[in-house]
Image (tube, rainbow, N blue to C red):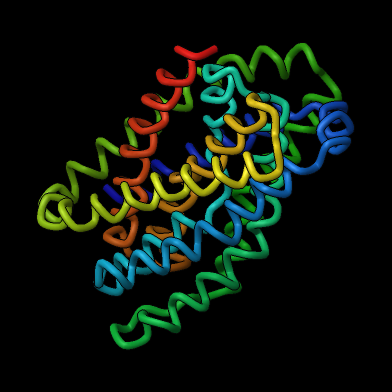
Length: 282
């Protein structure tokens, strides 16, 4: 079974749910104090891909994993970040807005970063990036579902709220199903590379959390905002990375999605520990 036929509907549902959860009034409240937005977007869109490039070089990853690691690093925030923000006593409205903004901005930044990464290490092993197909797929799977969710929320807010509650509960189980199917199909490749690649992925998450936490303190975000920034920078949209890597219209390479799979597992474990620690101090 090609996992693309599992990940595409999951990604579409997650982005539709993001649109359902957006409240236009929240934008006004958050933009009155823009420092957490600026710090989170800088951390997520600039520092995270740069850290991934540095780690991929340091660990001497083979080209397919090199590109896969950079891919997960330049994807937008994960759709479950608002749940983690709520559990951690963070600013949920800020979390939702940051996820929405990063999802829109990365429509333009992913092609740029991935073109650079592919030209850097991919051409020598026959990996190329069809930029046009990447942009079309991201528009179809990322922007359109979000817009539909916003429209439904505007037209029928009560219906949107009910659907949002269901989809929010389904998000994590659906991602686990995707990871399970992927592991069954590629377990030997994952096991053969889990030591170096797993260490590299864990380093990416921990460095991202440390840097975002430091930057939040630097601009004096309040504790709730700081926790949200840490979670947003630390949680990337693994489903999108898997969709790009395995799509027959883009890379058509499921092995390239292995960094995103390992990232998703490690990310949830690290953030659950983070939530447990910060809740003890609330």
